Length: 168
Image 1 (cartoon, rainbow, N blue to C red):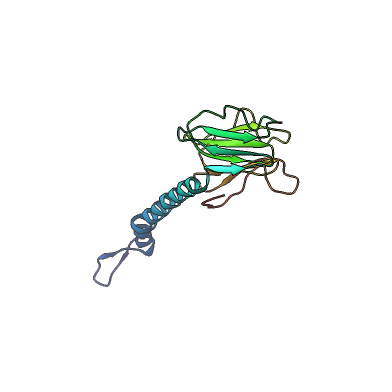
Image 2 (image 1 turned 45 degrees about the vertical axis):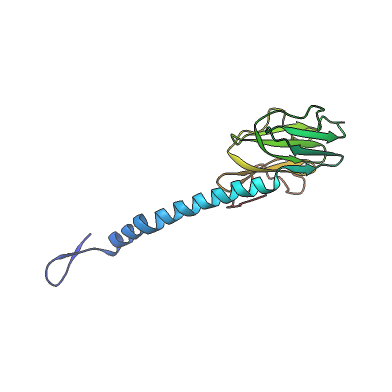
């Protein structure tokens, strides 16, 4: 809706001006902010995801993108030959281990008594992973956290955790 000035010329309404501000300033700023946050998430993953220790085992990234494992293998958490793949991160829980594929999917192995290490892994657009005693977490590219495994004290809500997180 346009109103007329005292000279009879059309004036831009506040809604129209607000739309222009949203389109030219706010939307590009939000897009840029989202892209910066995504990059922060990716960088946070790369800084701390190459080595981890579980209860009686450890995992580490190999230069070829595979995962080396050592220690107790009572529950299959440390395959003697490691785990081959194109991984960018690894983590260890008490009796399970995980690795993050370059494509954003998670591979799991070891004890799965509470659903913390599904043998088929977890598909998603993940950029970081973490393993607890009997639960697992993964940071989505959009900043939300996916959870699976034991949730007796709220540590792994099945619906995940909404937010704009940059690391776990």
